[in-house]
Length: 271
Ligand SMILES: NC(=O)C1=CN([C@@H]2O[C@H](COP(=O)(O)OP(=O)(O)OC[C@H]3O[C@@H](n4cnc5c(N)ncnc54)[C@H](OP(=O)(O)O)[C@@H]3O)[C@@H](O)[C@H]2O)C=CC1
Ligand SMILES: O=C([O-])CC(=O)C(=O)O
Image (tube, rainbow, N blue to C red; front, top):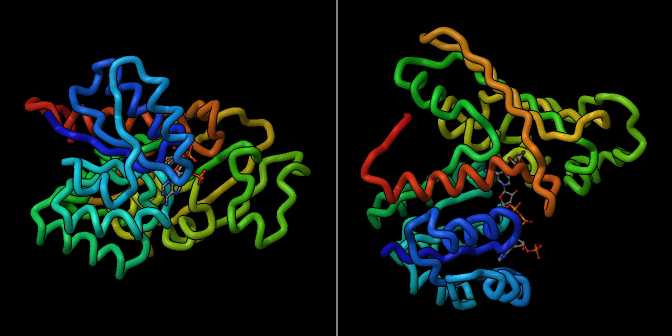
């Protein structure tokens, strides 16, 4: 049975644990790690059937077949190279870290060298399947427009650096327009989806991103427009935010669960 280790025991890590615990994902939840040991232990003891051990990153990587990174972009830099060098497959949630070209090329190279897989779930957006298909011919433009309630954007480096008083906004306000490369640094906990879209499509410099704060919203809304040889498509998702972490949409955790189920399943549906 596939042994899974989860690094980052917040909302997404917790949802994956519960999906393994309930038997929805047919794998062994072997180990947990978090910057807060007590948070990981609390999660472990809340489970009904699984009894994952708490391990430091190095021990976890030596012990499992697949590492789930559900921690932070900074964690990716530290965890993923070691995990690939140890021969683990890795599922990455903090995809924004891959905007760094040097890191990206190193990690893709290590995955090839060690015959490991890197999995990037679709996350909180819909349409990655369409981008993957469209890329087989040619894509001319990709844009992502992300709208979140102000509470979901609090603490983002861009908001802090520009002194934006989100709590005072009374109407929809465009906070940021730029490339995906800039967006994931400006909003590292809000638009990892821009990184996944870039990896699937036309890269971090050609993918355009707009981030909007809207006090009238209670959902995280992501719209993608893609044009290319195939024609044009637009997707829009209105995500319920997680109750634990308003920056993260529930769909992002479901997408991680679905990716794990897909890699374990001999029958593959969808692109
Ligand atoms: N790909 C996608 O579509 C999406 C990606 N994300 C990203 O996925 C990641 C997980 O999201 P979510 O579960 O909501 O986040 P949470 O903040 O709920 O949980 C993350 C957990 O990881 C811990 N952590 C952070 N850095 C490290 C580290 N270096 N080593 C060990 N533990 C660490 C955090 O601890 P502490 O609180 O102490 O920092 C926290 O307990 C985030 O980076 C988020 O931005 C989210 C939504 C969509
Ligand atoms: O969950 C979301 O709506 C998107 C998100 O935070 C991210 O991509 O980092």
